Image (cartoon, rainbow, N blue to C red; front, side, top):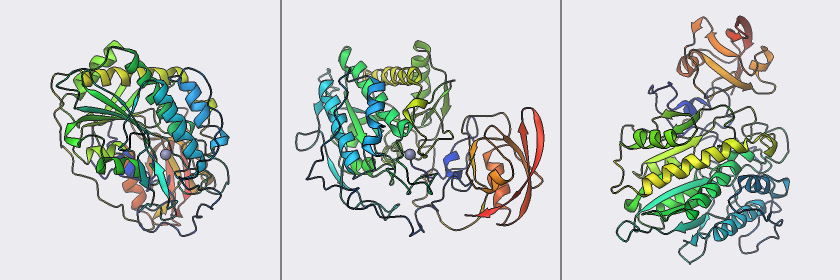
Length: 454
Ligand SMILES: [Zn+2]
């Protein structure tokens, strides 16, 4: 998942979290001030990090387990040997090759224009001007539909496989030069993609064709999915829906968050039926615009869903490792996604696109403002803003705030939700001293924070 905001909506939905990612930058999760003004200090990847696609590197041997096994996939992709799968790097090359091999083992057909699994795309990024300027590879595998009339239509299951390499671009630990393995972000989504592919390929053939699509360049700004919608395997008018899995490895206690339920009239009923048949509790979120690849498809008038097990304290840090993945939960998510996919693929008619939101602004404005350094937890809370962590060295840490705190007051204002918090924060200036009221273990604590500048 990319770290800056794509969703610009300020619209309350079920849990008041629509567009919550838009607030990430304001709340200090992001050091990257949007699409403009990326600090020039970000290092250019060295030529040692970036390999020309024409010279394939030698890759670590893939584990020889069941090609649909999520644990094998996460362990391979999130191993230090792949060095964090930065788009354009040797590690990303190996990750793409691994995914294509799995696709082949699962019986998926190569769906690239050249008859291969790897559509190539340029990696130049407006979001990160220091992204490698070479080529990257999406990975495409097709399960052809069984119904002669419907097989021309396509359902897409997608997950990005690139991550942050060694940082610092996109990192929330930019001062550390360490490998960001991205086990949850998004080896978990690729593992769920392979697991769902295994289920769907093994069962009765669905009526519509299903395209399995692993994206590169997501962390640099949805490059792989943007490229795909400009160069689709089949015309987008024939694409009935896109299901995105980005960060699905931390289910632990439910619910599974499902974004995009407002993008088609049939989603809630259809997902509810799948949920009733499975054993995952879900939280619906209407918005089809979010900081991941489904946004590219919804912007192109394709109904979308984004399956997501929430942010956490290891998000975009070197500590996002395989030991913290809930593989049982990941299997449950993959089973639910496969079930939803089958219900869509077998429907006699496609879905009814809902365009209930204005598109997000093309670029988030940069600029400077007050900085606290809290990491909000996106799971719904009754009242306030729960924190999944605070940034090291931030004003929030200096004030004694910690993971699990629920902010209910800020500078004299009551904080009911993330929107109120954002407004309250924006009403202040850098270097202001502000009283922050938090709930911790049932007690209210008043903490003093000296705001920084972002
Ligand atoms: Zn990410």
